Length: 73
Image (cartoon, rainbow, N blue to C red; front, side):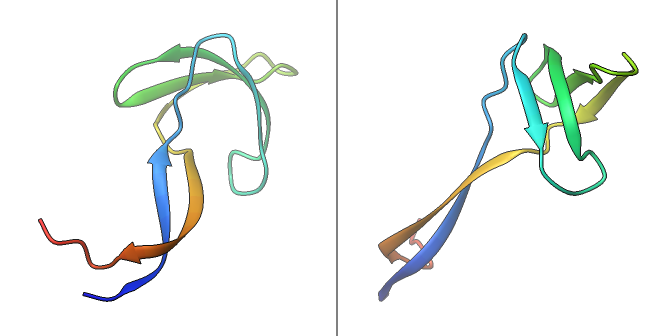
């Protein structure tokens, strides 16, 4: 397989107490992380104080050069 440019997504490692800003999408805005499990993240709006329990949805993304794609198992 040839090496190419590949974008890698990794789950964001949320921690309780983090203050985050989501730029775009339906969850756009400022949030405080108030709970984390393997599958869910609980966020609170600092203005309305409403709380939402969502499937984990944020990812780090980075582009890497010279990566084998597709990877062989």
